[in-house]
Length: 287
Image (tube, rainbow, N blue to C red):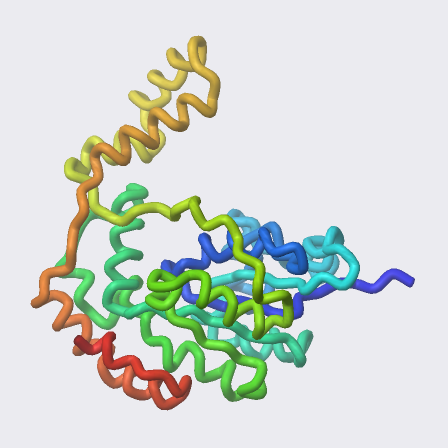
């Protein structure tokens, strides 16, 4: 009998909270099968899903099931899609199809998360540097950090025993203890320790935005250089050279204490409500 396999747990967010590293660590566990596609966009509303087609959004149930067809018998199946926690209807859509699924979210100090998200967009050449514009509740990076309102629908739909809220800061402080806790929750051997030597992308902002644009965006200079180098160097070497140049042009930047204070004020009431909802001490986020 062919049984369609679907996730036993879904990591619903948040973005810039270590989910890329987590995807790598969880994929190494012999009892886990993690959806090979990070971000499937499957449990978001139809118009939104269609808008994400160019990023590989899965729109048909058959295609979604196909993502898990290689899961070994008796393995615990997981999906990681950080878009879910910021889509109000995701909790309902997941619950309708998978009422017994376990829901996991990783949260990070929202001021640091917003700044990290902003840096990534500037670094990737998708945004001009504008730190003043960042400090507003309407800024796209800031909006993603109102976790209380983002997570409430999941607590309304699912039994609390099915929900696990983890903190990014704990992952940084002691990844082994963090993972053991997660492994226990999803029901696999918690003595397994993955190889965690591979580090995620470092933060920072471009020293020179013009140079950054030249290296990250399609343009005649970059196309010409690629065309010339193609003759001498394989694609992997060219990619490494470009990444090295991008990295050389990045400098570490910190939020000033004044900027951090302004961001914390934007988040304060959401953090206090979240503390009650998830029953965790978040006072460090208000410092």
